[in-house]
Length: 132
Length: 326
Image (cartoon, rainbow over all chains, first blue to last red; front, top):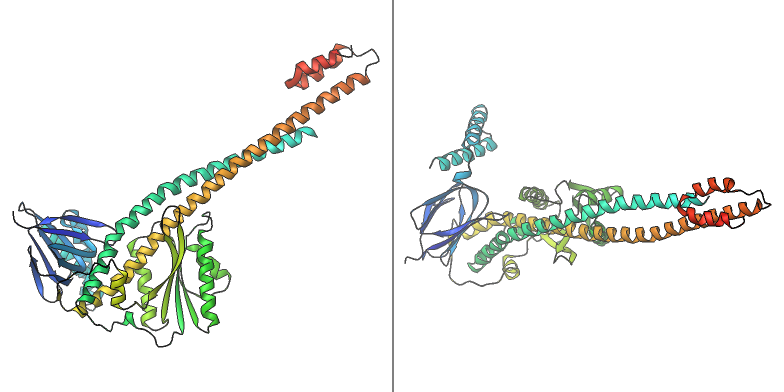
């Protein structure tokens, strides 16, 4: 039996997901995508606003949109700490699409609008995760 | 007038009975809420524990940073206070004991010649300090019985900002710690500056894990991103503890009120029964007296009858009393 990873997704309010996985793929702020398998060296990184993919042993894949957070890997345990994360199944694509358009319009009028840029990034991430 | 006293007592018993119904309802509501608040506090624990253990690992990995949140001012001139109370009263000594501790702390620092800055969480502390003309720099309320992480983040951000802008050199957090259903105590904790990472590691769960970590992008960058989250998580934990404590105190206070109401009702019912008995006795005496005064021989049953009807409750006694002189 192959060694599996324990995966936990923890928000400040509760443990939102826990399960086992063959591989976990995340993206860190500067270095880009990184995948963890069992036996990975202890690792600690800051997550970029991007998706987190959990490849389950049966071949299924759970995807989450994580807007910011940290990943810690040690002793075959992957812990993702994030105060804003959502599973792909719970994303409201209609709302995300509306938010994307609103943010894009705000950016068109004022290219310096940091908040709108962040909102656009979030909305695009949601749409991308939901479509996957 | 003998009947008046009885009626007055009856009215008081009625009003106490309806008060009892209210306090009983509040007790039951608080009892369910305290369970929910405890569950929330427990659900929030993994995050707080993990964020501490991450800091621990960072300390073990030898991250040395000069983060502004760790700034130790050479001389503390202004002290900030975060005071966490409830929005509503009727919770026994819950609000007053926090406020009393806070006021004592503020006084102690003022007498040392330091300035203060208050951040009042919950309507009760804000109204207390405003009434006494303290300067309140920040007051938030409306969520004391059910705080969300966003509330914690908002407060942590404002407080951190005033710390970073050097408006305050130190921040104390005053709240009620939820030890168990029966025990809650007011505690004063240092909120900022954060004690150095090694201290945090010691405060944490303390399972010194071996193995050197890989950090991305770098230990310093991770710590920098982590520290603000750590302050938020701590404040969130404090808010949840305070909420659970508030509900527990309210439940206890309302239970005591309900018990008191029951006791009062028993006492007043006794007094009322006695008053009623007194009234009846007086009435009998009056009738007997009246009958005797008329005793000259022309006292007929027709004169007695209306009186016995009025004293309906003791008609038989009246009847025998009326019969006696005849």
